[in-house]
Length: 297
Image 1 (cartoon, helix red, strand yellow):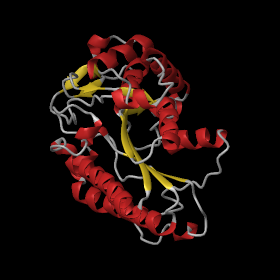
Image 2 (cartoon, one colour):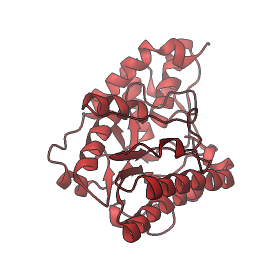
Image 3 (tube, rainbow, N blue to C red):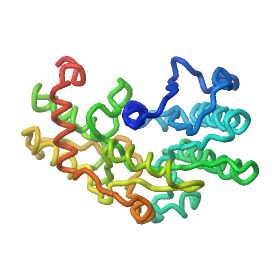
Image 4 (cartoon, helix red, strand yellow):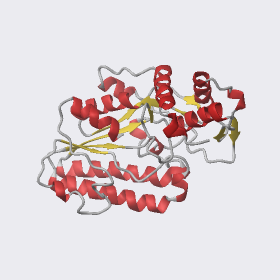
């Protein structure tokens, strides 16, 4: 997300200090002290120790410890050394309880999806930290909850890909290398997409215009994995009926649909890139980068 956010902020004329796991280990309490003498207006806290796919199933204990370290160290440094700054944090849609309307007042209600429970609860704890520091010290914050992000160049850094990129990769390899296309689950789990450029634009608007609040930022429509697969097949030229579905595999949450009435009222120009256009743009980029993204046969 930072690779999309930073150019957008720089284009607006902001001076940025950019951190990543190579130049700042947020699991260490003193990692941010190198910036004590700088004064920031905004702090975007995007850091999290997680991956897509079934990663959460196998690392619940590590996810709790490492993410709590990251969040506690970041919030502690913010309170001690940058109290004038507004902190903007990201919460995942999996923090909502399955079956409960995914609207902001329900973010702390019920139990998140079992397979994602630890990561979801860590993000709830981050939100509670923001509430607590605001209540005691008057610090300003914003928390935003995106639906699944997509777009050219997003989430293709060599780790497990989010589903829209994994679908594209598998279907494109099926087309180019005549490989079987096998998708996890029955294909009826539902997802919602928002283009990363739309998300960044809306998030930064809220960062400047909304204090001490939580907002969902989503695309406003959901589709099944089978629907998304067909859209991609139509654009790539692959027969959808050739796709196999492996119901023994992990599928995550059955649905992740965010109610976005609140953000639509808060953002005057709430216009989103049409899904068909965004997918075409993403697939075109994927095709141009296919040698790097698809690997060898």
